[in-house]
Length: 308
Image 1 (spheres, helix red, strand yellow):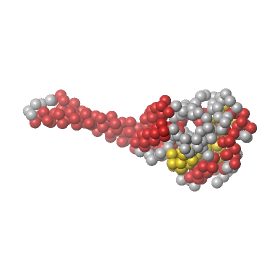
Image 2: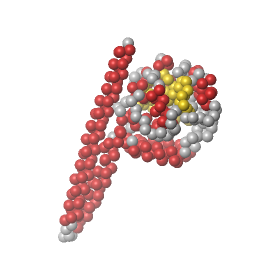
Image 3: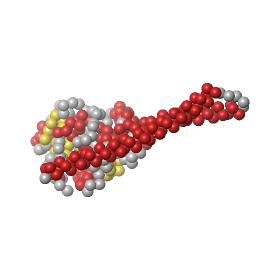
Image 4: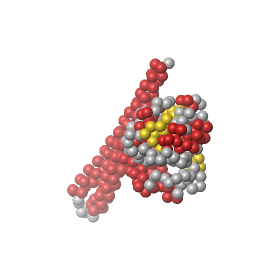
């Protein structure tokens, strides 16, 4: 495993208590290319990071999502590890994340915290919220992932250079996940340890939780346009069948409802058409995603050949 090809990206905001230890841990594991993207900390975060040998840049905007998007543009390593600077993620688990990438079985690896976490690492509300959000994601996207909010990830260059991140806050992990699967890249989870945070969390469970759930729904068209259309088609079909049952029931009692019968027919036909259009949109979208991924990989291969 060539760790010289790996850059560790750490987004920070007032993490002076943990950033030094976090950098030391990664250096002890053999990671020397460490990049801190700081959100204008008012404490000694940047000073400590520079003393520990990390490259430090101050982000031009605000929010974790904006920091990650900016870091992806500034870094050019073959593989990156994305990790929080609060000391909750052990550096010793980094190689677990890299292993599937170096074995060429994944392009994006997520550290699943929910398998093995330290007592007190999650409040009951946070743990419950995490499980609900992950369930909603699996329900909407049909992808078996169990910790989409994890801040510990490894990504191949072809992927992190192609993602289009628009969310500026803590929704970035959700958007990274959706961008990965929508562009046809391979994604897996590996179990990691998760430690209790030393200071106060910047995450608001209710406010940020609602934003994340909204993001899951709003990003659905990026992955599967049809899944946005299917509910409307099913609602039309349901209403058509309800009105149809009523029309037939009344007809047996020698009462006719001509206009309602027409409406029933229109609802059923429209519902079927919406579902069919959704299915066609899904097929076309997934074919385009595969083509885009192949083109990205081909472009990277051409670049490697030119460099050699």
